[in-house]
Image 1 (cartoon, helix red, strand yellow):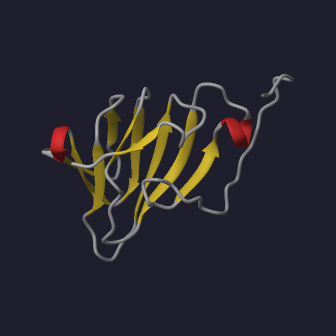
Image 2 (image 1 turned 60 degrees about the vertical axis):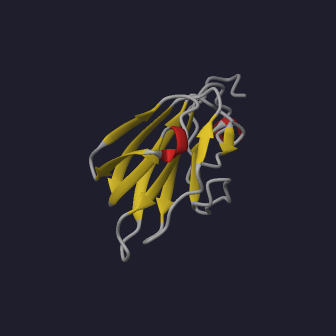
Length: 129
């Protein structure tokens, strides 16, 4: 909690382990900045890698692709997909199962991810299609 109304700067230099099995650099969260309703982080999908299928229970996700090309499988049984590239914004509604896949075998994909969840990883649930 930030009762003094101070601006907080966060410079993450170490990735955390996540249920999604992707390197995640947490910027803003309840733990790092005392936020109460938002989190923001940088996620890297290594070349040729993909996330574990998952969904976020009760929280929306906004993503901005900084680098790379990603195919995201989503929906019941991960039966739908979309392809996004650098400069694209994505919105994932609460509870929608999804699995992002880096389409490059030699370049990491990098995305800025924000959720209306200050505890970033606590709403993540594994999904078995």
